[in-house]
Image (cartoon, rainbow, N blue to C red):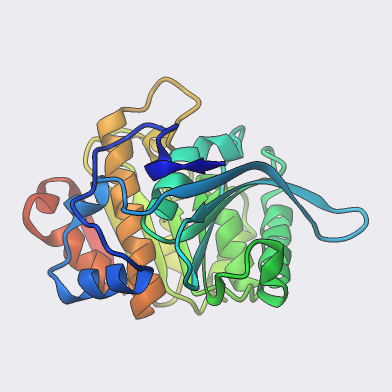
Length: 290
């Protein structure tokens, strides 16, 4: 179905931008000062939503997804989102729809939500390789050189493993990621793609072993925490009652800025500027890069 501006989903307001094409939107954003607040608004494009869209990797492997296609005619990035422990693809419905309203096609995956997360990471790498080779299984407008992986909590660990396993992705965005066991550091050391970690407020809730990611990824990682945010705020909608809509929207806007930055500049400099400018300074802290 075609949902004009994601009308069936929570709405953060109407966009002030009215580009006729995706290229026009890209040009406008890159030609103007990076502004995080603009990404709090719904983007200018309508979104076609296909719930429970199935991807068959083999005769025995069938992956359920929710697909969000941006309603413009040009090639565009694909953002692949993975849930965390005891959560589901529905935990990222609004994030995926919001990204698509800004012109970036999105795919929310359903993988086993109790792990094993190394296995999920390898499955994610297989999915990305499959789409890279045959983008038409999603849509002919997918730009296979601009696939971005996003994971929440232990889904963030799976994203890191997929990158370490050589998934052909531009990079990863980790939403308050968590790690378990001793296997992850060896994967993190192998990552050679840009990574952005958007963390909750560690003084409010601290994800298990979140420090692993910045510590063990050798270079190309940026990290910032969102003031007062809980682990659950990194989802939208959240399946538990601890999340706050205002902070969820902050995560959504930061995610959108980061995905745009990575897909069109190959790094997170644009997003970094948007986080540190103006009112963003009061929302983010503990910013670091290497």
